[in-house]
Length: 137
Image 1 (spheres, helix red, strand yellow):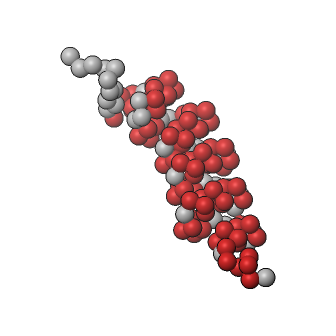
Image 2 (cartoon, rainbow, N blue to C red):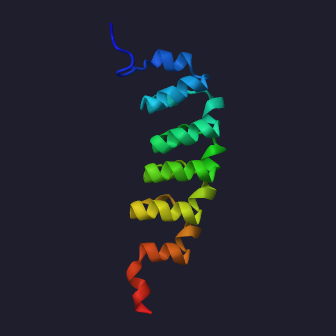
Image 3 (cartoon, helix red, strand yellow):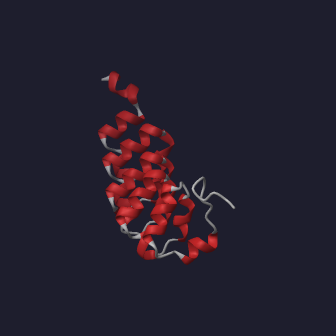
């Protein structure tokens, strides 16, 4: 007999069968099986508490979040702090947010391709992108 406490294995069939079961999804997160959330229902993909926990652990899960949560600053910030590249799945509004922009740019300057033109013109963002220009004045 396998010792279930050691490491729980999740099967796709179980994930599909529990697509609307928040407790199952929370347990999967505790067990570091974030992939299971890809099979969560639309209702759970719109559950801020669940998705905030998920993206904090694996930013990639933002891809599955509801449109509303991809426009929720708390959820997006938690996701991009975990994985900057996931900013490409954030709403346009948040790809133009100063805090989100600073967070991703401080991790990787290549993230600028996902940010809005408006935010890239912001003086604080310009300072991150072109730090030497500050001394030329």
